[in-house]
Image (cartoon, rainbow, N blue to C red; front, side, top):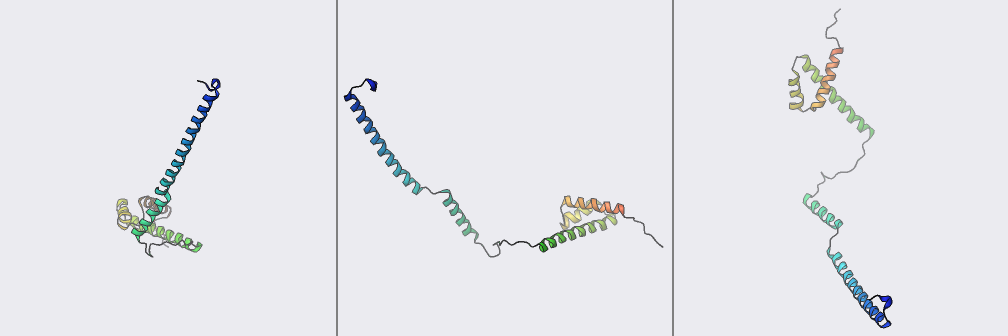
Length: 147
């Protein structure tokens, strides 16, 4: 029956029924809130799990003074020294390649000696240095000028 055709008595019944349903829902909602709070206490958050894992890792590692890193800024002089050392290493490798080229050593033997055996540079750098050395050798005359 539609409520607009209902009598006062029927409307009171509907009202009391609605009131009972609402009180039941509110009590269920309160019970659910209590359950949610209990579950929140039991559930461990992601941050807590990460902290537990980190603590476990730190206990397993047992950091030593040697492994602790301190952030230090590199000075411009240090950077220049590093660059100079790289350049010197490059020049030494190229001089070694040039001396082996002059003696007539095969390229594969030079590669094996410098890259594989000594580990002075990688394959790509070796071929780059070889190209530079051969380019320089082509520009410099091999004949000696005598007076």
